Image 1 (cartoon, rainbow, N blue to C red):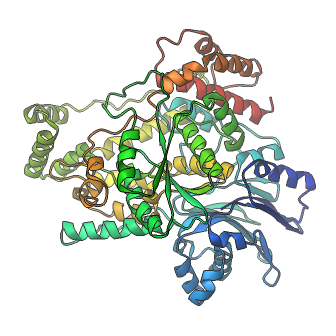
Image 2 (cartoon, rainbow, N blue to C red):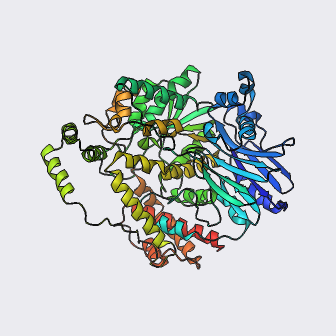
Image 3 (cartoon, helix red, strand yellow):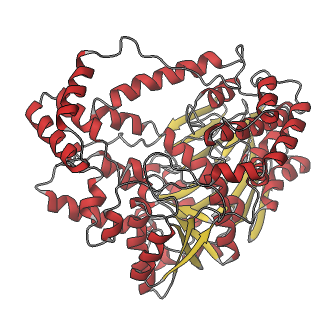
Length: 635
């Protein structure tokens, strides 16, 4: 794992000391172990190593091979080391001695960008062939790590952080990005895979790479979840169960290579408990603990129910789990010792973009800080699980059966679901067929205009994206294949990628989520819909196939936990500070074409009695967005 930065000039223009210092500056504020830099005619590369695996201590990054005149820089944790070594014809004992970066450098020198899909793990890397004047910047298949770049003249600059690239030269606000961010009334941040709030700064997509040569820059994709789609048809449920358990075990254990301690973000949910059920026993066999971090509400603060009747404090589930997995050492964090507002401002300086999850992402940041302080450099999560290992939507399944004209099967499944969840089957039939006979005449979407100016540049773009998404979602709820296509667009992978990667880079803790292992995603997308949802049961992969592995009391939980149930009360504790700082940021804002400053001022000065939690989130992230706009425009 590393923080990387550098520049390649195709016209031989030297990378100045001032530019090198700008590129390097954000890394020096992070938790790092060693910094190395190399340079040549028109090329400069830097790497701040963060040791995670035993092999990483021997990394020599960046590196220049004088014989081939190739240059390499990487932020990397390779999962398929043995396979990569075999592809290079190396003996197993040789492969075992090589660091991940050295293995991949040899691999890319041998195959260039022809076999990128054969690599597996969490990485981004830069590779420059000086003789061919060809530079590539590669992201791993599912975006476990991320890297950004910008081009000035004939020079490409790259960095782990947006904020290393922004000060290099004047920047332009990306109006499409800003308007979409404000106009989408969800936690969604990104409308596509490459753009950032800065027009001149982009990133390779998950599963993608860029080529920079004399003909310009070219964005390419070497993998998407549906690129090699084949539906998986096995003989019976036992075969699916065996295949899933084997694959899940491999996805978890292959990442457990920490040279120190390993942590896990653990709740009462299916996904993190599935990861824990494989990680804890594996680590115990190797004489190690698994350190869990769980979000809990702050004592004395009011909590809110989100309507699903889930547990507002999941610590009881985790304590019970620790009685089964004896090497699980638990920490329960209520964030009473930090300021949500100050932490969001700090992260903005590193991320270069605001968060909408102003509470949960701050909790993760705090957990990573505590982890690092306690010698933990690898954090497991199950963030992506809802779209892979615990996917299951009964509405979509029923509609899919209907559209395939399997009406008797549809009614049987609907009745089983109603019986299991104590719904009226008669009411379901009436409501379902009424909806089929009376579909909406016109699909409508509304932009969130709470703070978005009427004439904001990019507003039409934001509306078009949301309308397109609404059409996709309508199909998604009707057909399983449409759901597969939607997932393959990888927007959610990017959302998780940027935020979790940057969080870990800042604090020196590698995030690994086995539920978004490339092999897991491909396998899950290949399953028939019945494997996820059947006989009245949703989320079957875990509910059925994890029996005897995940504790029964976890599998029997009917409602998801309410994480951050004290969020509103926490924000209100800091509201005076938020109001003061927010009004100061507004006073400093002159060249703003997107945010209605009068409405934002009223929201900060006015009563908060009628604002719900997400309304308060909206005020916070809009102020932070305004602060970032001011940075981009040089205010």
